[in-house]
Length: 299
Image (cartoon, rainbow, N blue to C red; front, side, top):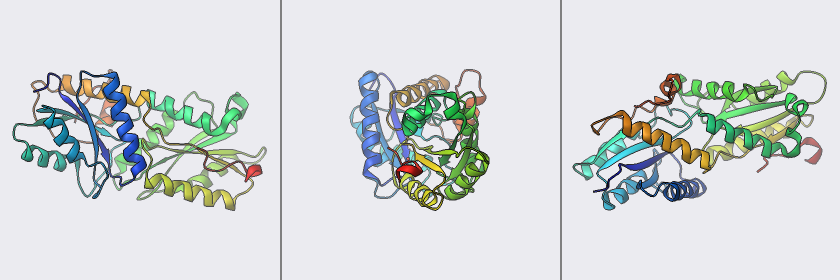
């Protein structure tokens, strides 16, 4: 039996090898930084995933784990999905009698993730993001996955507001890849209207995704189509957040809050809406996936 509860990172719904590789990189990063904590990761909610969450659970049990702290690798709640995380974890407990788990909060919007998003914006714009005047004519379109649950979508809007505060951009609008409005073209229309008359505006399409995958590719295709139809507006594409050290830091913050928040350690359902509550708490503790287009002149 391990001394520390094992850390299980639960990604949502990808069949993409790039997303699986990014999760593997994140697991390696956490293992290097926190060798005292057994860690593994996988995906739920996607049949035929290259990295199933059930395999990650089995691997941790083989390493001696009988207690899991499960951290959803999400920027916002997912809303209803075909295969819910609690169902996957319940099946794992049936396969491994005596295995207990508790679920922590989603990751966003956390200040450290907002810092990474700002870095992705600067990378997308290159040297054109350094001066206040440059940022003042730049509008950001923060694009989330989209869900039928309005609370999940509201978390994306909250992240947009927090990203806008104090960073000097003309505005941060929101859009969704699927299941919610506005979609990416409509969101870009809103960004273009916000720029108004005068100096041509710039828009950065910023994925609010931790890992690459199919939804991000669809996002890029939609934005490229819109940019081709509006050659007077410069449209830049930012990359996903990715397996950055800041992401590892937030995961460990959620892990420690989870382990401290449920003594004695016992099985508990994964609420997958904990981040919203987490942000309202004074100390952040709660329980419960390259340039897209060049500027118009470079197209």
